[in-house]
Length: 207
Image (cartoon, rainbow, N blue to C red; front, side, top):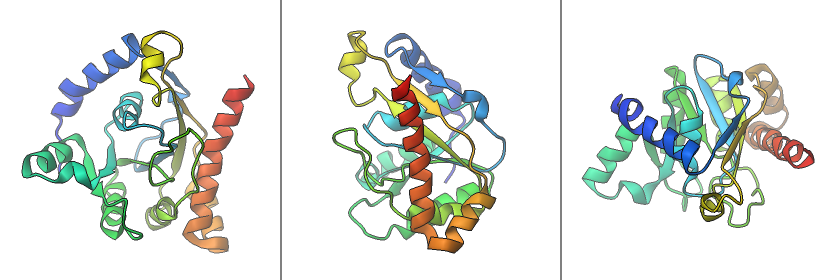
């Protein structure tokens, strides 16, 4: 799987411009970005999430996408050029998607993962699935939590009643996650990561 550099040369500037001019997207704490291998983990509220979180990240990213987007040879080729790889959301075990994420992270990439496994229909966060915990353990990569807001109601943003927002939290180092993994495995690690996303949401609501 090879991500096309044209994504950053052509497509990324278009999405960044759309985000700023049409949806007035606000990005908070972009300075928290480290170099090297990285897992980005956040809430999932809309099909709009992947391109706009990618636009907020100041480096090339890879992400999981539902397997139905890879049905034809052309779609599969196109999605891979965007940096996407398939995940079967109906399957209890997504070993191929998890293994692909591990491979990418181990090669120094930044990979976006939604710990809930699917998007929330009402904005409330769903229980964390173990996948992100296992990936963090297998790669020993740091995790950067993020919170998405507004992508579930683009119409409201178009009418200037709201705006898209991406807030990055504090980097979670692998040493801290390994302690959790030893205590409760991948599930407990994933729950901790999602809790950090919830803390961002709580702070934003208190402002």
